[in-house]
Image 1 (cartoon, rainbow, N blue to C red):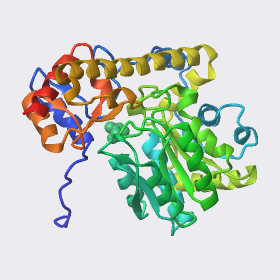
Image 2: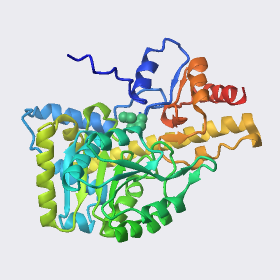
Image 3: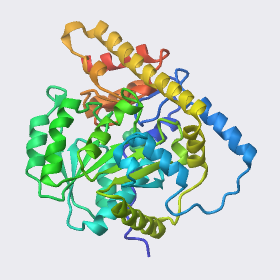
Amino acid sequence: MFSHVPPYPGDPILSLMEAFQQDPRFAKVSLSIGLYFDEAGRLPVLDCVRQAGELLAREQSPSGYLPIEGIAPYRQLVQNLVFGTQHEAVRSQRIATVQTLGGSGALKLGADFIKHYFPDAEVWLSDPTWDNHLAIFQGAGLRTHSYPYYDAATGSLRFDAMLDTLRSLPSGSVVLLHASCHNPTGVDLSRAQWQQLIPVIVERGLIPFVDMAYQGFGDGLDEDAWSVRALADAGAQTFVANSFSKNFSLYGERVGGLSVVCSDAATAGNVLGQLKATVRSNYSSPPTHGARLVQQVLASPQLSAQWAQELAQMRGRIKDMRAQLHGALHERFGERRDFGFLLTQRGMFSYTGITEPQVHRLRDEHGVYLIRSGRMCMSGLSGANVQYVADAIAKVLEA
Ligand code: LMR
């Protein structure tokens, strides 16, 4: 009966995580999947989350069904964090926010909603983008295309070509944008570039869909959300998928949000209702624990200040690792090869220019795991392995 079902070739990112776990070698370094590891190579349990967990354990709340759209105070806290408490769109209640199963769940919910209410819309993704963007939007039955983004020759943005492409799109096209810490390149638009891009989006009647999976990993919580807020300021009716996987180190809890900025509160009410209908027919209602943890932290001035501090430490460590790897590679290559991109890119990821055959050699000969595109997750580096990784890269690049 199932003989026509083909084998699954595996996800390009998650299958590497499994391969790494099964790799018996002692000398191995995971720089593939986007997970933040601390200096000791562990996934951290943030102290603010630990305290929130203790408070929750004391409350012993039962685990009944949540409302379809999630916990009301949590949803409000998501809006406050993403847009800022004083943002006009928040105050005028023209944003519909739903608790989602991480950032991926938010993307999928938004994609299903778009397929239903804008069935002819086509989706434009940056070239390159996170592999799963394609899978999610295509899986929702939407056609996808790419717009120029990264210039491999210079390591910078093809910004003029990006703008030209967006200017040529039919009204109602969906444009997937990364708020900050672009995955996979680490190359973000500058504020000046956003200021050129946003009027094009508004004038052309495009639908921006912003993926914000790394809020706080670039320059700060407010700084990384600047583009989202600027879109809302400009009156763009915008989808925003946000995730707490990385910035709360709560990957497995699947906790995030989808916010849709609408023209007015009444429209936001309708959009929220139809998002609820979409959730109900998918998985009925969201899980409780992760959202309660995030809610506890964000609702407490003391715990949220502590969270901001812990996040700043993670951000600082990544920047430090960028500097250390840059230093080690510069020492080996001198002026023969420029690794300055390690210092200018933002967030967890770096597009290294390491080719697919070189990625295979790094893994096979040195146990250093990168994604086949040459994307490196900087937060897998530590003081203990950075020299080893630099040596391995030097051996592979110079062979
Ligand atoms: C990544 O890009 O590595 C992360 O977003 C994790 C994932 O699910 O792919």
